Amino acid sequence: MIVLGVPLPEITPEWLEQKYISGPVPRMSIDPFLKIVPPEEPRFRGPGCNSNFDLGREAYQTTTHKISGRMIYPCGGYMDWHTNGDWPGQRMYAAWSENGNSGMLWFKGGKIVVDYDKPGWNIRTFKCPEWHAVFSKCWRVSIGWHLEEKPHVVEDLVHPA
Image 1 (spheres, rainbow, N blue to C red):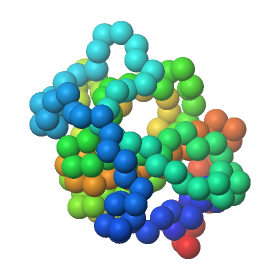
Image 2 (image 1 turned 180 degrees about the horizontal axis):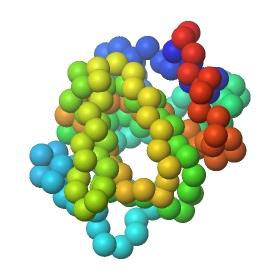
Image 3 (image 1 turned 180 degrees about the vertical axis):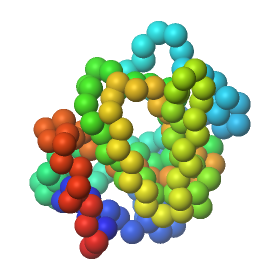
Image 4 (image 1 turned 90 degrees about the vertical axis):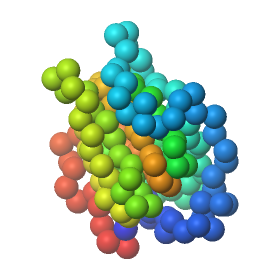
């Protein structure tokens, strides 16, 4: 699959072993984390238990929009509640899940809404600032783009390889 000019990697155990660099130790286990609501004060970036990975120079040369994130989450990994309020605009994330036991949390109407991934690649778009968090009870890889340059052009962004 090609997203915004970037071929998505084929995720294998070997790819994960090569790309994953151990991130911070979780401050809590994943189940209690899933019940915490966002803090009262604004938070632009969420602390977490994940690691960045290198997409390679070619991805940055071929992409049609600015890459805003590339993370690997191990089993028990997460990114805490945040809004990205310091860089507002439309986002699109391609997220790969090992078995679907991962996803995003949204805070809507005073309630936590869980949006599970499907196994394999998933595509989501949303507008920031908005409270959201990420959780993973399996391997999860995500690549994000900031679509502010052309927020109305969401169709024709994802193509088969």
